Length: 268
Image (spheres, rainbow, N blue to C red):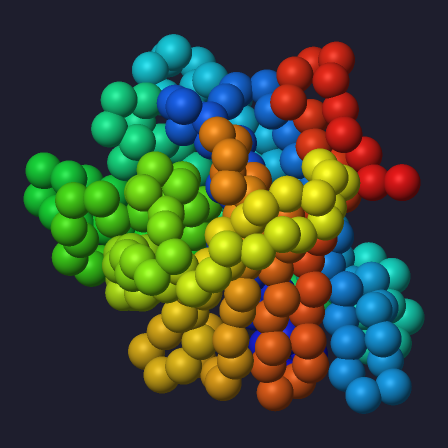
């Protein structure tokens, strides 16, 4: 159970950390891809690779929306040490004019547990409706959750795009409304410092951002804290995140970024 909770925490953090990298002035940039790696440390275990995450942004078939696809896959240490694997795929459909999320489709695999889900955001009735099914047991009734939403409610992927459109500056605090699994959470985000950080993009000034995602009635109901570094430039790329929890520390680092079809930056 501890490992499953760790895996889910890692998935949430991965999505929250990494999904902002595609935003430019639009803030979405179709054709851009990005890869992160996550490592886990606790006591004598140091920097064990546990997962990778890939993102792509595409124009939706109708030409009016964006489709963001993300995949998180377990690897390395979590497979060898705990004999546990996970996989999560999220597809978020985003309005090309308002940047509001319209639909979230998710595939979640944790060991033998498999779930498919879809969340539909209806801004005429101000409700999100979430439906989850078990593809391995089609006789089981779907699990359905409906909640009230406000304008600018986001899912895990589109939330960071919204954050990056805000005027980040040290000392500022913002509040995001994020829907996950049909529930809606208030996520305070504090900009606490401006620091120089080294990454595959070079040594750059970054904003240190601290989203409040841990605790009672939060996205992750356990003790912990998260620090995220986003470049202070026009691209606002998150290059690193450190997450501390009672079950260990997770470090997420940028490994590869593709801005254009023929232009890549890769970790050496």
